[in-house]
Image (cartoon, rainbow, N blue to C red):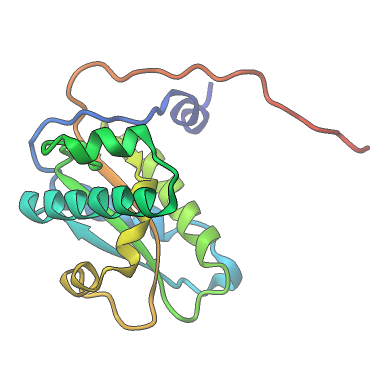
Length: 189
């Protein structure tokens, strides 16, 4: 099997990390892989914020957990997962990862969601090929409207939050999630 396909088929999300930092050179290489992803009209409008400060990471984790729990209460749609996290002061949407990469799109992005998603996909595969674990963190999306977070990350006005990925050395065995057969609705020839 070729190396690229091997990385695609072997990669799995990691939710438990060693505390050791990811070397800056490795992070820069992974960010470069993300930036080299396909993007709408080659606008190259994707930008990144990297957070390694454990205190800041945990602060924003707790902030988003509180926000999600409050939104669930106000909507009347209680979510047991969110409720458990809100009640557990150690719950962490970033799973103790030593680094978090936030993806933003500049104002000139034509397809920001697509560009950011492709960037994260490239970064996940690059990280896997380098021996790191990653996980896409959808719960972090609410941070895109948090003024304190945007200021701490130095995000320019008009930029749009797109995605979040955690990265680090896996702690223990990586849980594999088998895939079913490919689902093709129709093949028109």
